Length: 184
Image 1: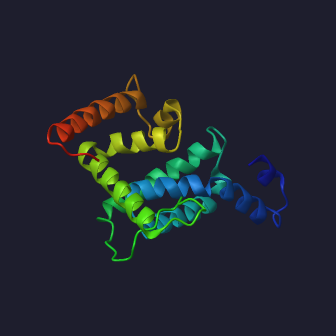
Image 2: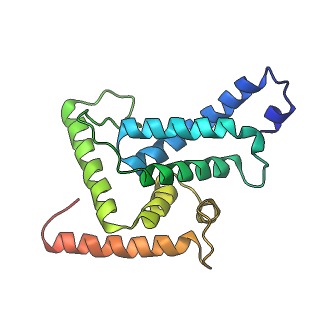
């Protein structure tokens, strides 16, 4: 960001592109976890970066750039959620971070099935805030204090309280599944 601010106006677009490229994959993954659908996630990520680009000059450096960007992603996600449920698509879902090795159709189907079951399990087990904190912490390796700042928690234990609650709910739900002889 410092290089962006010091740069001549004609050099700024390239520096902004480089900065956004560093964060694109993480933001895209976060958007995918939020939407559960590749095309919607790509649209949401594009909206996040468009808004970030429009307001790049307003970034004051009070937080890390990634935290600022995640707050935009969070706000855009909430706005999208308020505007209605994500649109359904008949297209096959392809996960953003499939390995470079070309898996066979059975591997893809099994992976998609597990991912879908896990997404449904988390959606039915956790409330929205717990799910967001859980995926940011365990999916994106974001520290709890950064999540607390990002999501503007003002409770004493911050994001940790949501992680503890999520773990308890997940443990109880897994016990119920096992008691019925089911699995994820």
